[in-house]
Image (cartoon, rainbow, N blue to C red; front, top):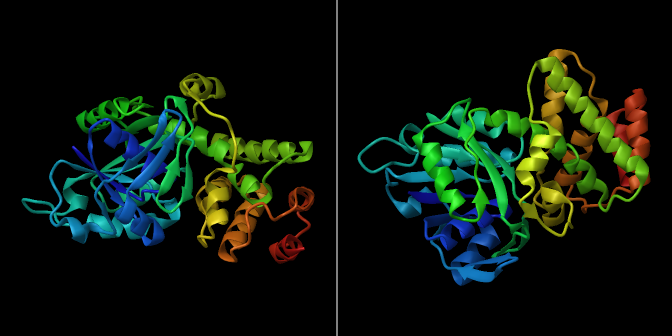
Length: 343
């Protein structure tokens, strides 16, 4: 199989580099300065086992490849807010022998949250979900880093909305050769919802990293508690903390950085995934009648900071905690929160 990595940033670049290390055929899809750097000098991949440069085919879109192959696998690793454009672009690509990618090829959604595969299923007949446990960093255009060892990451895979098949087993087998653990599960969403609860902290880290105070730690506990209450109300199961710890035990790294949302603010992309992390909890809370004021606050602050390209970590921790207390008490409208965030 040939793997087309749509969004060769931190996650996609790492998956692509590791698959290439293991001898699998890989095409990278990138844009802007990252595309130019990889095109000119290759993808520089940094990991505990050394640094290497991968001179892989890199394209900005499907036209550069002509008709896609029947054995191509599309691996979607853009942020969820960029999914629709990517899926529409690649879904319409012709496949050798007739038909389109959306009709004939599998798409593997490897992102935070749970929304991307639902978006994909509106367009593609064969959709697979991945619960991504993969510490990685977009260092600069042309350079990605993955500090995990001895495994680079753990990627639970399954068909969406449920089940397994020969395609996902083959993809998992290839990933297993490429320094990943890739369990094939019939209930991949259960793992993704567990990861979602952890990702509710992404906005906190993006806004106020580094977090040092005990009150900020308690804020995450309250944010997560909202998420757990919503999932219970919706009857949505999720993997336990013990299951996650057992699954992730082979990935060790020296921590640092504020996560994917922090990286979005740092790079000044103008967008952030909070609508599909904290916003997923807000959506479910509204559907099932569960108050989620803290997740709503974080969603709104994070999207405002991204849209206005404010620096990562520029909201003082004490101010974030104050806003959270007021939001929980129902006493602050977002316009006031926003003004406070500017101070």
